[in-house]
Image 1 (cartoon, rainbow, N blue to C red):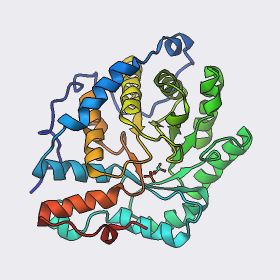
Image 2 (cartoon, helix red, strand yellow):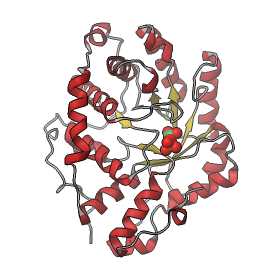
Image 3 (cartoon, rainbow, N blue to C red):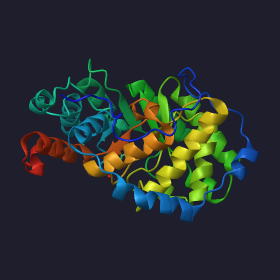
Image 4 (cartoon, helix red, strand yellow):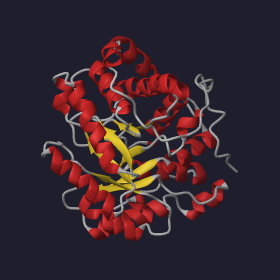
Length: 334
Ligand SMILES: O=C[C@H](O)COP(=O)(O)O
């Protein structure tokens, strides 16, 4: 039998942070001095992250526990031009039962679900119907995803439409040009308007880090989006040529830590794009635990944006239980 805890896996350096009530990040006035003071030491960051996958070795039951935890944090995603209602329904069925009952029984685990299902606006009604009664939220990518270059009033209207259609979480894309030109005020104001358009729906700010030019820009954009009220900061759309990476992750989660230490508000983190291997998921979780502590290992503060990660996790769990690997197609999600 597995414990759902990951407590045996690594020491927690960050559990000493001040404990405050979990309230949604309301944002704060734009503090340009803070933003200008944010730096990122690229070589130190790359050195630190280069060591992570090599020294991270989680075995047997602990590995299965980490993998099940990862499953509960997946935003199970389909974002393709050829998405259909049928594909979304299959994805939602998988989100309800991401790991087969046989495996859960063998591991002594109760039923679990993924963190959310993430789709384009047009697919929201199908996802809402298919997830009815499951408690699994529908996340929608809005604001002219993935480039975010449609007029602002249309991007804001798209958010409102997505919320009206039943999305409980909105993944917005920021205007990369505001970062690349150092127009932090424009980024702050845009993010604030998007947060307001979301209303009660939680907003994840996609930075598209592969297009921001430098880790310092990633750090500054993270801070500005949190100041403007982002509930989550997310690396990528999955459509950039470089998506989630470990150096970008370190920069973003340290920005989250800094924001928490200064304001008392916890902002979530979502690495997305190209995360398809179970061992990579464990590396990300271990990094969250080391840098931010156990509180950030739950789906309200951590998600993977991933379309195929679940397949590999299920294969690894099957290997853990049976000693054999099954063919990948048996775990296909769509
Ligand atoms: O936000 C989620 C990403 O679009 C998924 O990317 P992926 O297909 O590389 O897993």
